[in-house]
Length: 85
Figure 1 (cartoon, rainbow, N blue to C red):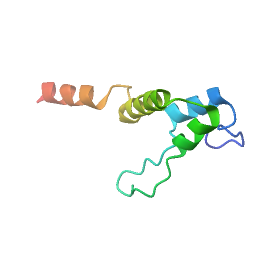
Figure 2: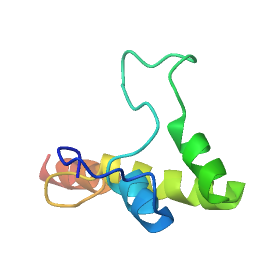
Figure 3: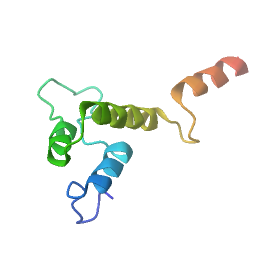
């Protein structure tokens, strides 16, 4: 998705997929500042998404961003680590 020439912002369904899988917002952990662009807000305005829809997308994105290599969430990974100790 990120290496192709396709504009993932044009179609609302494509934009939603891109938002969940890759994220439109700035996601730099240690370099994030208030000046980082919130492109998802711009995409949402373009496609007429409601604030509730945007919040839902951000929740899905956050869940995927926290998923480990086997698809487990960070919380599940911590529980598994604690059980091994």
